Amino acid sequence: MSDMTVRRTVRLDEKLDSRLEDYTKSANIQVSEVIRRALEEFLASHAARSGETIADRLERTGLLGRFPTDVSDLSTNPKHLEGFGE
Image (tube, rainbow, N blue to C red; front, top):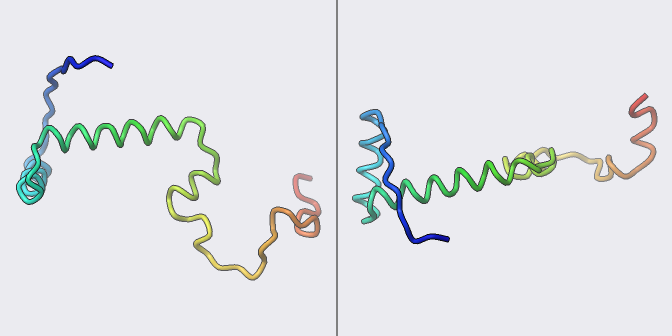
């Protein structure tokens, strides 16, 4: 990877800019560092989703296993799969 940096200009509404300023002051971190970290996380998240399965998405969003059920083998017990896909 290159050590060269590129300057970008970003327009923020006043409310978002104020939140960003408050955070950077309280965390003692530069605005550019927060933006770089947020952009890295955003791009990594979208890149990972390109091959994401529904189970991956449910796990990522915290929905996998969230709802209790008394049936623990819905996907593996043939009894529960009778007529599925017909």
